[in-house]
Picture 1 (cartoon, rainbow, N blue to C red):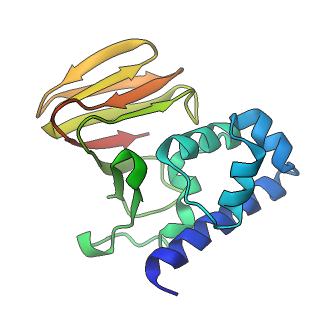
Picture 2 (tube, rainbow, N blue to C red):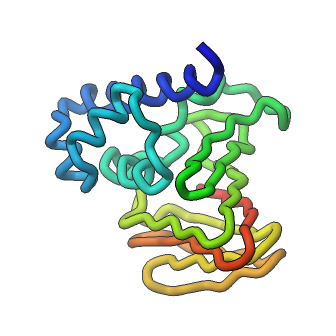
Length: 185
């Protein structure tokens, strides 16, 4: 099994375990996440990979940061993680990639992630995984319209936006892609 297939199956198994450990049926999770029961079943069986928006909905339903949903893709906690060893998750449908910059650990509070979104894409999250979660976004290249709690912010290279997310959010690109770092605490 190649590395991508292994990561795909590890994520599917982890999501199933999160649901069953909480005593939830697929229908319970479908109701709380807004994702169809059939789609959840296909994700848990490793038949499809969840999109970024689907992972956002699952994080909200489980009240976990996205990093903990993706935890099985990351090795045990090392104090240093080399660039070549940082885990990457991609949503090809949305032209989105997510690189975990911080050494993975559920014990540490701050997490840094480098993201890239291709031109003419919109990724929307209905609600935060953790209401009030603090985010710092630094745009490295391109242009990004970030809407948090109904307020739109147009970011250019070098701009930093700090906010506590309590409601819906979206990340939208126009003619340019966007590459940014998001730190969450």
